[in-house]
Amino acid sequence: MTEKVKGPASYFPSIEKTYGQPMSHWFDAIKDKLDLPHMQIVAFLKDTHAMGHGHANAIVAHQLAARKGA
Image (cartoon, rainbow, N blue to C red; front, side, top):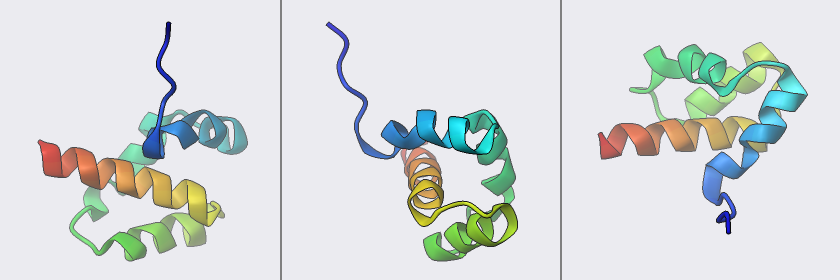
């Protein structure tokens, strides 16, 4: 049985469908901004890519968590 995806990654299929780009595109878009505060990166995605708050927040939260765990 496949375990259901939880947390920020649960938004990824919707993000890819809504914005027509793979997640790698969005991760690359913010990779040079990960030293900024969380909400500044969210604002960047919202302002420059017309992304909804929940989707932008999921991308940023995922990448910051991955960075912290690395």
